[in-house]
Amino acid sequence: MHELSLTRHLVEIAEAHARRENCREITSITVEIGALSGVIPEAMEFAFDVCTQGTLAQGAKLILRRIPGRGRCLECGLESNLETLTWTCSSCGSFALETFQGKEMRLVELEVN
Image (tube, rainbow, N blue to C red; front, side):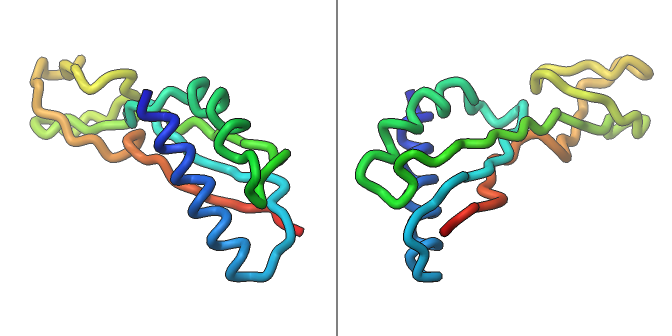
């Protein structure tokens, strides 16, 4: 389960930012997770409590924003929502795809005291 490692690193990054600003605690961490990122949001939620024990984020709320996958056909330019990276253009039948949204995972906001 790579989500445990991702969550641990997320908490480390959040804690480093909070310490740099002389904060006493982190009350929430907001993360964007793309539908095509390979990250299972529910597994991150499960790991969050364990990974925050003994840190400035202990007791913090994890807020996950899910970002839908989006791509563009390289043959005809049709833009589509994507649920997987396996895709066939509904307009021209091409398999040539450029993904421009949904692979990301990023820390976007910390709420601190």
